[in-house]
Image (tube, rainbow over all chains, first blue to last red; front, top):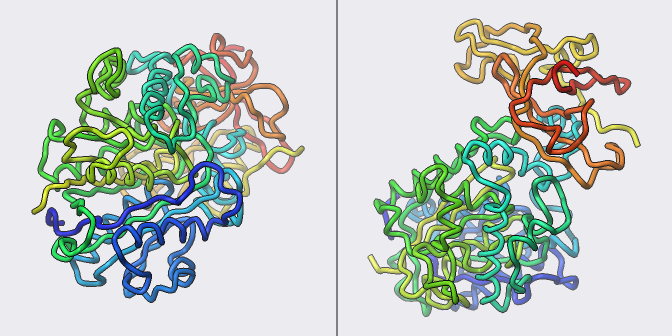
Length: 389
Length: 133
């Protein structure tokens, strides 16, 4: 798609994050949606395109009182919202609709009205049901982690390298009042935490919390008339690989990451060095390492050192802010993780480019939001810019 | 609690029948010769429907694993491996490594493993043990 033809004009999360026992899933979508609409001065009736995952777009539109001319229910896991942004931009450019609302809501912790949500796998007759489930996996902590022993061996990384990802993201979370986990941690704290699925301890696994988020997109032309600072889309990508982590082509690299990332960077026409701020969906500690390599920010084998040398870290007594601030909200490991975290990665990119983030990266102009769906099953990438076309 | 077991489909029945008979069956394309798994009646590499079922050696190496410390009720109470083996013929397969301590010391990447069929009633699962164990 052409750069800077579509912009985010509204963006917000649910009023509360973390533990929200008084709100069902559909209301978490609505709470975030109303906040995002208020952010840009719109009413539900101003929306003519809707996209969501977990919940169906029909339920969303009905509940909010929207009559859309375009709807997208792409549901490929936690990066679905990146794909929605991409599809919505194409739809707006094609004239299928003018103003799109993308929502997420999930009662991951409280499980209130949580019938929906992303369900990878299916029943006993599905491929994962036949060829993975019989061997005892208990959700993502013992599935998404399966390739990692091979990855550590191939790259020469250690479990300390995994732990270090968690430590530095906690440093970012400490600067964010809305983050669920803000107390500083050390590599030893991470390694000595309760073992979940060797080599992964509890602190290497994402949180399970309640929340939601919503984004309003419109054409760059119309964006100028909104009260908010527009954030323009300059590149997008998406791909899918496999519903079974055991069948990943390469345990050291995600094909979906590589394809999605390359597509987005080719479209944006920028180099990796042009990126001021990066969000990589971190369901587990290894995701930022794979992401840095598969998106081309680090050569294979250099991502762990890149993080260890504080290139992604905030300013502290140990030095200045790193050259590539990463997961500056604290990420799924420390900020929040409802189940489909991709929406929160984009919310932080948008806050950074509007200049209103809790841990603001000074002068950030280009941000990348990169998401994963399922367990290396799918991927979506959005590259944003706050510079007017 | 009974083990969670697969429900075979028309495309996969032969594989589960093979396990019941003590044979690890893979498929390969007779056009491009690629071996593949899981089963389907066409080649995922070239799309050809000219494929055949054959008996694999049952040998491979431990490719990657976790040791799950929160076992599902049907998996007992002790930490156990959830592993992927790379078969001699090429494909990767999820399984459990059995017949050895479920520890990082005993579960060395790239160690040779061999299939060991375990009967769970209506289904027999292909588990793996260290070769020679």
